[in-house]
Image (cartoon, rainbow, N blue to C red; front, side, top):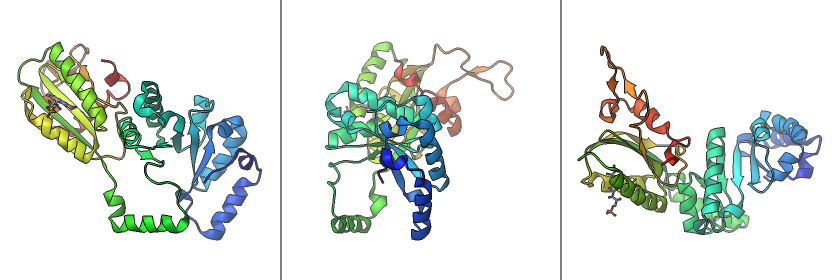
Length: 314
Ligand SMILES: Cc1cc2nc3c(=O)[nH]c(=O)nc-3n(C[C@H](O)[C@H](O)[C@H](O)COP(=O)(O)O)c2cc1C
C-alpha cells in the first residue's frame, strides 16, 4: 500500500489504520506500507512518531524508490523500516552497467547489515533477474514477471500458480560448504585462473559465496538456486585440481550471506593466530580445513566471517 507524504503528515493516520484493522479484521503483518525515501526523510522526527505507532499495530514499512532521495543512514537505523525497495533507475540497464551493479551490491550489503529485506523494482528481463539474484537481491518485481493485472486476471493467474504447486515451485535458495585437498600445492597463477573462471561463471549462474585456500586445502561456500549449486558441485567434483572433497553442510537458506556476485580466492596463510588448540595439545596445532570439517558450525563461522568485505579484497 502506497502512503503519500501528505497522508503520512495526517495527525490521525494511526487511528485511521487502527479503525480499519479493527473493522475488517485484516492481518496487519500482511500489509506493507510503502513510503518514498524522499517523503520519509522530509521530516524524520514526525515520521518516526507515526511509524512507531503503526509498527506497534504490526504493520510493516518499506522505503520506496530507495537510492533516489537523500537518506541519512543514521536516521534510517532509527526508523522502524523492514524493507528497502531499490529504485528502478539502478535496475534499468543493470546488465550493462558496472556502476549500477556496484550500487546494488552496496545496497544489498546495507540491507543485510541492517537486517532489512530487499526488493528490486522495475525488473524487465531475465539478464536483470540473474544479476539481481547474484547481487543477493531475492525479491523482485517488474514487467518481466507480470504487467499490472485487473482483479479477475490476477485471481486467475494466482489460482493457476497455486494449482501448480504455488510457493513450492518458487526457486529456493540453497547453500553448501565443502572442504577438499589440492592435488599439489596451488600457485598464484592457478588461483588467479580459477578466480577468473569463478567470477565469470558464477555471475552468469546467480551464484555467490567464497573460496578459501590455505596450506594446500580449499574450503568453499556456494549459495544460489539449488539446481545451480548442484550443477556447480558436479563440475567441481570432477576437477583434477583437488581430491577428498567432503561436503560439510548443505541446505536451504532464507537469505544469502555473501552479496558478492562471484567468488574470490582468499588466502588465510598470512593471517596471524590462525590456530586451533587440540584437547590436550600443549602447543596449538595449525588450523587446517580438514581438521575442522567435522564441525559444520565452525566451518560456517569460519567462512561466513569473510562476508563483510573480506571476500572482496583479492
Ligand atoms: C576448489 C575449486 C573451486 C572451484 N569453484 C568454482 C566456482 O565457484 N565456479 C566455477 O564456475 N568453477 C569453479 N571451479 C572450476 C570448476 O571445477 C570447473 O573447472 C569450471 O567450472 C569449468 O567447468 P567446465 O569446463 O565444465 O565448463 C572450481 C574448481 C576448484 C578446484
